[in-house]
Length: 420
Ligand code: ATP
Ligand code: MG
Image 1 (tube, rainbow, N blue to C red):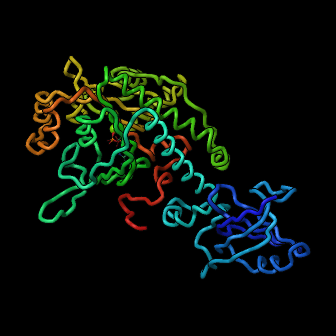
Image 2 (image 1 turned 135 degrees about the horizontal axis):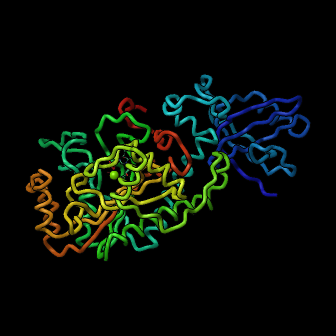
Image 3 (image 1 turned 45 degrees about the vertical axis):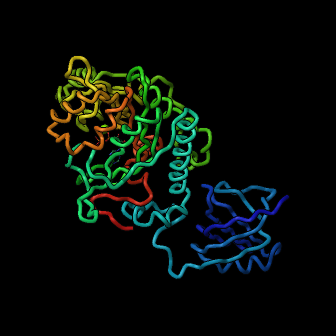
């Protein structure tokens, strides 16, 4: 019967007769329930009775022999140390009984993480990244960091945030794409967990202006299949890891998560177009799928038992310059991974042949000279390679059934939010 010291915040206090019940939110999802009885611990009872919701405290105690609370683990306290009392009533309900509007949840996220549901989301996010690191490092990938202040974007100039960089103009990185590819000149497998900065005026439930990605690149590949294998195994590993390690979080969130079976279904882009057309949806042969088409395809695939599926072979007219083209010249080795109608990753095999890459830049109307730093890396033995960027918030959103990507990141950066 060891004493345990637990620190956290009061999220609920109830006095019934000569008993005070205090729920303390700490780092695990479910609160600790401290039961103070006047006849058992009169001094602590007197202290506890006066404490307000929002107080930061530590207590020492032991697990109660009889666990009566369904809300958390019950403790008998031996000592209470009060560290800070709230100077005003809390602006939000940290117990989570009164549902807050998304706007309020985002504004007070740092306070609402005391609430079990909110905390559970970010504990799963943390587990997701731990799982990704575990999977990738045990498969020989080296974790790298590439610059976030850059001179050129990966996709052209449209969606870049400008930064004044001494006497030059620079940008915030929208993707580590070019840098991770350059590293294929000396590593055979790298990954980076990185922010993406995108300056588009999004007005959707799945776009942020600052989002995070798990970016992977691998060299000496035999074909695109090598990349698809890495991604499907990574995603399956993450989902399995969370289902095994985060039972309490998933219970609080009411989520039933099971490891998806691999391999994921591979759908040719053209097949997807045909399926959608047969359902009366208008789709272009040369452009990326619209949101509506993506969603509809998700429903059709779900009916066939595929929550997760690849769309492979996007038309050259719809992709970045760095994707390798198929022999026909019309399609590329670019793919998306969709999870119930939502794109969660994009990737592909890259063009590693110098001459073809220069040609591709020109065809896309880009000036090869502005990509000199990148092109140089292709001069000295660049192996065939490919990789992907997997969206952290998008994956988390789908795993937990969240409706808005803003629920999956602690501090939101979008069109209207720059603070907190
Ligand atoms: P979309 O077409 O959905 O706008 P994208 O194709 O522009 O996304 P990519 O450049 O392919 O995005 O980025 C790789 C992954 O990173 C995406 O599949 C997605 O999961 C995530 N991602 C990209 N941009 C955003 C964003 N603005 N907000 C949230 N996640 C994003
Ligand atoms: Mg994409």
